[in-house]
Structure formats: C-alpha cells, structure tokens
Image 1 (cartoon, rainbow, N blue to C red):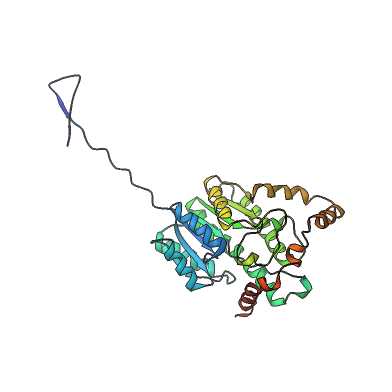
Image 2 (tube, rainbow, N blue to C red):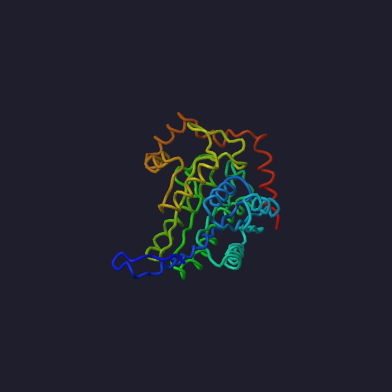
Length: 297
C-alpha cells in the first residue's frame, strides 16, 4: 500500500487506498437463426467480433456446429428448424441456461422459392410461409417473452426490398417478407416504452446460395458482410427500418407509382428477368435442397 504525504500538514501521512475495481459487465448474448452459412453466418461472425456470446440455430446441425467452433470458444450451436413453433423456445432456453441472459434476437432463417406461382408446389408454398413468416413470428414472440421482464432487448428481422417492391417470380417470397415488415412495425409499436427495439433490415439481393442463378439488375448482389454490418449498426443505433444499400429506401416512393409506370420501369430495367430469367443449372442445387426440406416431415 502506497503512502500519501499530506500537503496541509507535512507531519501527517495518509494511506492511499486502492480504487475499487469496477465489475465488468458480462458479454451481451444474441440468438441468430439460419446461422450455419450465408447471411446468417456473416451476421454471427460480425456479432462475435463485436464481443457477443452467440446461440446459433440452423436446420443443418453439423454445419452450424462447425460455424460456432470456427467463431471461437464460448458460443453455442443447436439444430433448429424454425418452421416448428417450439424451436424458438429451445433457442431461448439454451441462451438463458448457458449464459443467463438474452439481449438480441436475429430472425434470419429464410428460403427463396422462385418461379410462376401456379407452378409452385403447395407443399413448397406452405414451407416458405412456415419458415419465412412463421419462424419470425415464433422468434419474436419468444424473444419478447424473455426481454419484456428484463426491460431491454433488440429484435432484428431480416426482411427484403421485395417486401416493398415485389417482383415477378418472387410471389411467395415477396408476400412473406411483406408480412415480416408488417409484423416488425406492429411489434415496434407494441413495445414502445418497454426498452425493446425492433428493426427490420431490408437488403437487396445477397450473394448466397439462395440467390444462385438469379440475374441482378442495376447493381451487383450484396456481399453478406455488407448486410451483417448493417445489422451491427442498427444494434448500436436502433432504427425501425434499415435498407441495404441505403438507396433502397427510394423503393418506398417507387411503390406509390401507378401500375403503368411500374410496368414501364420493369420493361426498361428488365427486372422481370431477375427471377424469370434465372439460370436453371446454377439454381438446381439450391432448389433440390429446398424441395427436400419442404417434403421432409
């Protein structure tokens, strides 16, 4: 222990007590669905670098465990099919059991069926709705159940610009993402004053397996890391809606145009060919896996 000499009285000596150490707050905990690869993997990687402890869920158990291991020690991976109503509860229970808290929930899991609606298999349509919208509904409900009592939290729902500006060949995907946007806004209003933020992230096409064979227009497909950075930014500075890229917000105004103007724009820009002109060979591996998931009990 050091001794401090008093300037007021040279003969007096006072002990200089060590300052009490501030207890370091435990790392924040985030659940990320669909985290094995692609966009979910990029979000998980970014949050891990930002210091979060992660609970990663994905239907591909082996790959999500590999992802968790590659992100470093301290993370948890579970097999999770968000189409099941109880899957979200299992992820939340794992987070509370392992880390004792739940701060962030990222609803990322989704599927992208394309093609004319009348050619879509009914089972595929149901599967897309169960994953893209049902999974987000159950994830939000579970997250709120845990976050409301603690008085804080942040829910991030990955939507799409197609929820604002639907395109030919994306009927079911656009419908589910529009539902995610409506859910996010309604829930944001419900949770005002409870310390819980809700953000919908609306990316343009992302360069993942789900976009295989599609033909982007105007701008190239986004890197998954670009969307992950936008998620991290929304967690630092909460916003209700985040477009990636930011120019995507202009679509909210374009959607107000009359049908004849939208038709002219589609013809000029070739947007109808993004999905309808997709490369079948490049698309085949993803579509085959998607059909398998949709028909597996």
